[in-house]
Image (tube, rainbow, N blue to C red):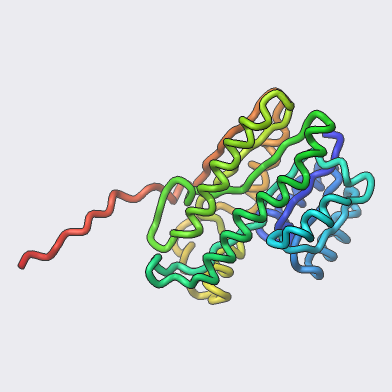
Length: 254
């Protein structure tokens, strides 16, 4: 790998863990996130291992993504790997009671953010004749659960968008992978439950979830394979998670 690795949502969770994994291998990094203090601290820490450039922006802001990621300084402007990691879930309410602001935020971040970042970085990959886009999806793209409505729908978009990118990029020597984790203990549930630590902790009670480092290792592995190999879609769960039986609602006997 000769270019840089650009990671969105790099201030925590999968993004931060991926930054550490790529830094350990010496790859130049562009670390993108909303939180200035966290990005500054991570850039300062990892710069002792590899060149790092921090970008503070919200991937929901189309103009900021275009302006900031479309004008990266040398040598970071030669992006070889784009990790579209920024994303979130909000709430667990049913579709009839869900907060529409939550839905808007998930759509704007999980869908539009992926589109904006991809559209900004992709032309340079095509020009240089190579690259790799890794989109962070979720098992929720394929397996529904109560309260997963807009979040699952947004990750289904990521899955299908990744597949369509592959067809658009046929013959252009650009790889596209969709990595879809299951239950993983990060800030994900804390954000979903708006800072309620008790609810977030209960999600992982009595089971061993994946860790951010586990998922980062998978992302790194996918990008480290020989250039002629493309991992289209990789779904991963902890051993303690699997699928539930079909739910059947039965009317009570009169």
